[in-house]
Image 1 (spheres, helix red, strand yellow):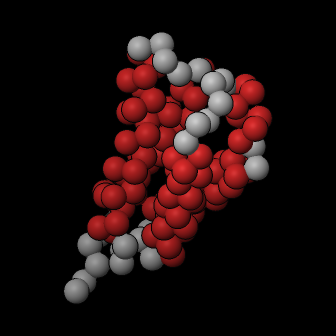
Image 2 (image 1 turned 180 degrees about the horizontal axis):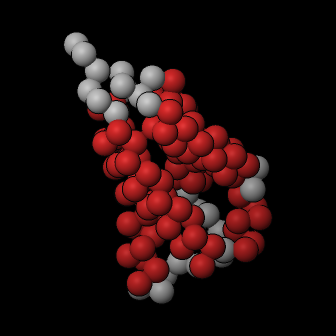
Length: 124
């Protein structure tokens, strides 16, 4: 049970450390990766939903057996961004740094699968 707990705890901590600063870096992101963000609700919505999932990962880490079904949704969360970035990269539509973050999400998805397989379903 230690490995699944560690995987989800690290994922949550990592995700918070990457996403939380995005609330304060919008202007920098617009300069480095133009054009300017025109729909701020999508940007801040993405950051907020992402942060909520990082908290969910910390909750899963607190009791992996109890929250095992939620791990499947966590895998989906990681795959949706990682695969979208991968497709965009093949179309030459994302920067290298973005590709790195998308790849990391695919690595997290694989680790979440490992965690899911290592945890026995909780008794009802």
